[in-house]
Structures are given as structure tokens and as C-alpha cells.
Length: 263
Ligand code: SF4
Image (cartoon, rainbow, N blue to C red; front, side):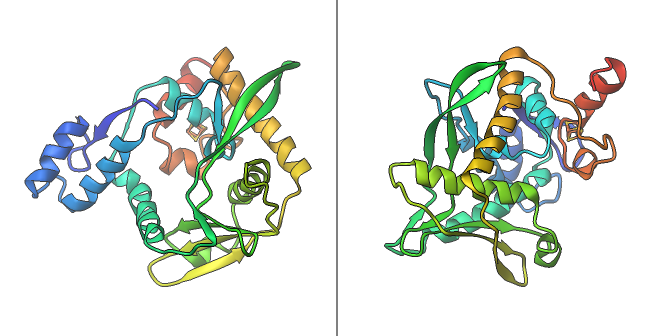
């Protein structure tokens, strides 16, 4: 992920992580943001180190991405975001901090699994690891729980995102294939906003469907990683909500689209 620095929230100019950190450490930021939140965000960004493995890894985040083109562009091109664009990382981290303080002998919390698997790419088997880290596996109740912070629990739970459903489906598959060999019988997303939290039971997806999904998504990802084939834009480009407000590489995407005809 070549995230090479930030765009300052104050003047929108390029700034290195180090200079942003200096500004926040001074305690009075040029962007007028809370320095503790910015330092917390920087810490999460700096601590991210991709795990090195002897075969390609496909994380559950990669597999359930709304736009593979965005993943491709973020892997191939240098890009920057504003620290405020990463508020979701900081917010999500609060939940993980909370989880780390709750003890229950029946819970496995935030354990990373890497499951060997084969993906077919143009007729050839490619050996990969499917990597996932469920927030909680409750071994007593055979249940998986994942936590989602959101601006509005009401909106987020009106229609549960397909990506969330697949995420839990893959987690259940991973837990069964892992050394735990545990067949979970239910899974939940717990949505949290500033007023309420709501635990939603997500319908189980059978393993056959999960494996088809892993194959479909995995082959697109392996194709761009090995053959440099640029994934296509999301159907409604550039009108998709993700393109407009949440894509840090939309300028590279539209350049490819309009100037080079790569759609
Ligand atoms: S602008 Fe839209 S289509 Fe392009 S990479 Fe970003 S999310 Fe994907």
C-alpha cells in the first residue's frame, strides 16, 4: 500500500507523515484538529506492516472490496489522504481497544488465520493463503461476532452491506478450515454509533457459495497482481458513492478512464 504521506487537512498541501507528526506533537495544529486524534491515526498508519508469506495472501478485506480497481491503484500508485479521511481507522481502533480489555475464556479475540487454498487463474491452480481476523469467535456458542462503528446504526442496518455478509461468511469458512476445526452456527455484526449499539444476526452463507465467491474475487485480484490487468471501474462510475467521497485514488482512476480509455 504505497500511502506515501498525507494531504494536510488545513491547507490541502502534501505533507510527510513526519511533518504531520511534528505539527501534532506541538499540540496546536495548523489544521485545527485535535492533535491526540491525529497522532492516534498516525500510529495506526505507521504500525501497519503487511505480513510476508511464502505464497500470495488474499485478505478478507481484499476479497470483499467494493472496488478492485481501487485496491489495484492503491497498490501500484503513490497516493495520499487527509488524516480526517482516516477517521474510520481511529474510530475502529477504539472498539479494538475496548475488546482487548474484555476477558472471557470462551472467546478468541482478533486471532489472525491464514488458510492455504487454491485459486484457478486461466486454468492453472495458484496456491494462496486466505487471511482473516474475526473480532470474536465464541467457542462456547459457536458464534462469530464482528464490530462496525458507523455514523448511524439506523442507516447501516436498514440494508446490510453485501460485503459485510460475505466477510462473515468467509470468517466462518476460515474458522472451520483452521486448526480450530469449529463449525460456527451463527454470526453477527454489531453496529455501534454514538447513541446505540445493535447486534444483527446475519444469515449463514453455505461453504459452497463462499468458495465460489473466493474464487471469483480471488481470480480478479491475482490477475491484477500477476498480470497487471487493470480491473474495470464500478458500474456507475463516476457516480458511485465510493468514487466521489471515499476513494483516495479517484484522480488516477479518472485519468486512466478519460485520458487512456482504460475503463
Ligand atoms: S474512482 Fe470509483 S471506480 Fe475508480 S478506483 Fe475509485 S472507487 Fe473504483
